[in-house]
Length: 137
Image 1 (cartoon, helix red, strand yellow):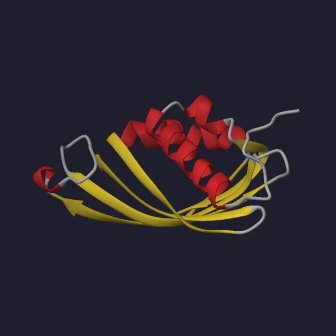
Image 2 (cartoon, rainbow, N blue to C red; image 1 turned 45 degrees about the horizontal axis):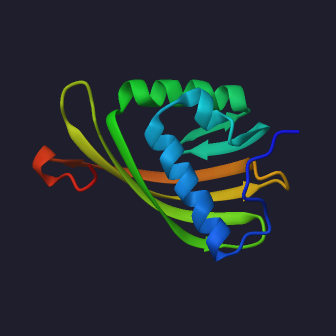
């Protein structure tokens, strides 16, 4: 049985740990590793995309990090309940033409009893920035 501690029900410490683990994994930009945090049948909404299943998540992440170069993410715990966590985040990246962006958003996560994320709903907005204005390094 696949497991990804900490497990629900969450408290402040375990929810904060889960957020930090997600931040670290996404900053590692390894689609295979990141995808293992999700259930086989995970359900996502990312911006205007609806993604179903761990394999589709992996393909999404491969494409994401081919487009979003020098990606660096910061997540912050917003709220939690027994099996759900809400985060706010921002990340910075540049496109192949050298234009930098800061992307802001919120995510709602739901976990199964084994600590795997079964649902992820993300709302994200992008703002063009100058390289000198980057905050996340």
